Image 1 (cartoon, rainbow, N blue to C red):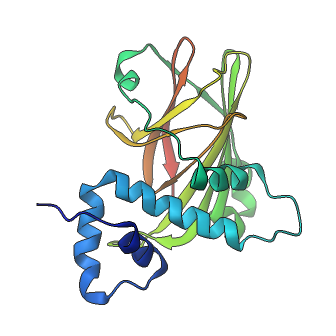
Image 2 (cartoon, one colour; image 1 turned 45 degrees about the horizontal axis):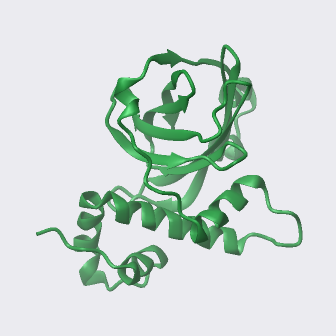
Length: 208
């Protein structure tokens, strides 16, 4: 029977205080328990928010993460990913291409993307984190975004799948300002946004 992870165990794993002899078993349990994995990401996100400088107004994505601590959204339904009409968004800006000639450590840690399709626009920012994947040691990434335009629904649902797949690996809901934030391992992904008239897909997103 898979191990049931308690909040105490998840917190200890996140802050590095879990006993070494439990690390392998807990790492395996996260693979079998998506809810616990989301709880781990939420705890790490909250910890980063607390550490941020509070002498200036926090950026909107930080507010989103902080709100999620106290008002977690209900688990989104993901059946629409495969059932609704799909529209592919067009990538119109990639900061990695624009800054290729002046590539630096900063551009390798963070990049921005903009997609458009009809009346919708989606701005994304990906940032490499200091936290790493338990097994590979690869750095995790935070992907945050906002959708704009008249076709934006009041309640925006977001699902992340592996590139070319319809199997969700992360599902979340945006806040009232259409901001959303997820954490991902390095890889290639499709981002699915549920709109009023179907699904907008941001395909083959290279997060690395």
